[in-house]
Image (cartoon, rainbow, N blue to C red; front, side):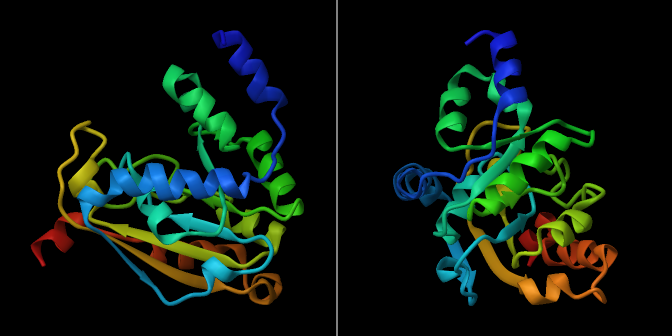
Length: 224
C-alpha cells in the first residue's frame, strides 16, 4: 500500500473491537514467546480479565515491547492505541490492521483517534492507551497527554492501569537488542463506572491518579 493510500485509509478508518480470537493468538503465541526471555512477572489482584463490558486501561510506556508485557497480564481483548507513524512501517501495517489498532497523531490533539475510541467503547470493546504518548527516554515517565481525564469522564467506563517496571532496562528505544532481565507488570483498578460518573470526581483528579498509578523509575528500581 502506498503512503498516500495509507493516509487515506487512516483518515477513513472506523473504530471496531478487535476479534477475541485474534487477540488470543497475539498474546498467547506472539507476545508470550517474545516476552518469555524477559522473565515477566504479573501482579494482579483485580477482576480485569473477567470484567464485563467495555473498560479503559492506561499504561506507562517504558519500552518497545510494552504490548508484549501487557499481553502477559491482560487476557480481556483490548484495542491498542499507537502512533499513526507505525502504520507506515511496511512490516507493521498489516498487523495493525488485523489487530484493529487505533492510530494517534503525535504531539497534537487527534479528534479522529477519540472518535475511534468512542466507537469501540460503544460497540462493547475495550481500549488500552499509553497516555504519555511516547516511550520513555530516561527510564521514568513523561507527562500525561492533556485531556486524558476528560476522555475518561466522557466514556464513563471502569478504569484500570498496568504499570510496567523493568521494561526500560530490557528494551529501551535506544537499542533494538533485547537484554533479558526481569519485568514486572502490576495491574490495578482505579475506578468503577459509578465512580467515574460521580460529578465529585474531576478530570484533574483522574489524571493525577493515573499518573501516580503508572509512575516508575527503572533506575531506582534497578538499584533496589
